[in-house]
Image 1 (cartoon, one colour):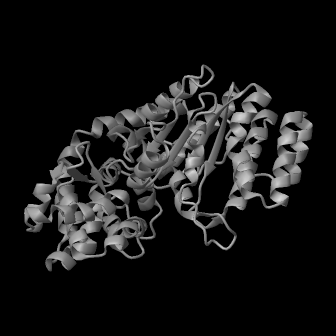
Image 2 (image 1 turned 120 degrees about the horizontal axis):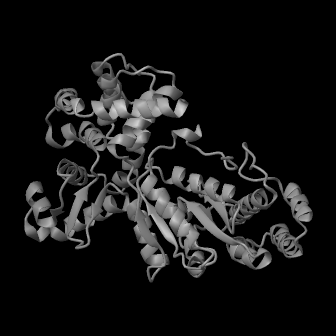
Image 3 (image 1 turned 135 degrees about the vertical axis):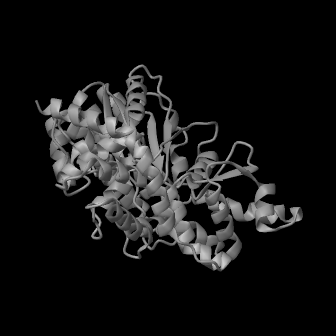
Length: 450
């Protein structure tokens, strides 16, 4: 397969597992020419694989060279003037369109080709409607007509259906950042909180449906409820974790990529420690603290990555946590986080949380007020009842929470290393039952080479 869009995952064969998600997306995208595909929203925390999935879908559709033209755009978490955002969006769309129809891989070092290059491609393509639309956009840019420019850019995929007879799949990664980082003026004084609402009608186009993604689930949910009323976007949860077998396969692929020999025991230990999470694997394999010579070495690598100020896992999660905690930076918000994380494998009602906090029932409104920013930041999850909540079912996150806040809240030290060692001893017994899987994978790998 030709990778017209350079995937952020790196080497393409590091894309592991995701059979269920990719099968569903391929079936869904096959309905676009029939105008039966409803727009979707991929919801999952940071580093859960959403970008990898969307970029792989782009390359599959590009290689199929069929009736559906893919368009992938990532919104960045940096301030941007609406006019420049419109330029970035439209030029990215044009670049990916011409890449598809002219069968040219996209540039590696930039998001899109320069305007004069795009104009030449349009002339080579000999489509007057597209040239007219580009000339109209150029006029808006020259006159700094930001509102007209963004309207034309957002409507372009739908308009191109009429210009070309093709269908489009519009993928927007981290769409929630539009509510925070796009401004109506070049001085960044007028924040356009409701910009995603510009897609309110476009999202219902069956000939150019949208697949959007966001890393802050609460933030995304609020945005969807406010700006895409009437269930215009159907949520699809993305788990960061693979199943156990796919996780083991990923461990061996990473070991090949980093040219590291692993014993079966070490491979299984790595997979179990990171709970079959590819991002966590990447952090361990690329760690400057890496030591895979023994089970103890694996555990020390993991502990430094999850607790050391220079550890990637620690820094990544603290960035994520601080977005929410800074809004409610008090002792009780952190305690609520610890309570729900400790009980992360079950739902807890507000009455149970009040009891754990030692609060009376009349403080329920205060508790709900503190829960909402944690939900908004994606650190805890509500349930359908909106009375019960749960922590994120992630052991790594729990370790980081407790290392960061346990002593501050309870004035008691914790020994994460002992907990990890106890867990490893339990895993050793479990590992014996996985030896057959490891052997099977090695046989499959050898057969593929043959």
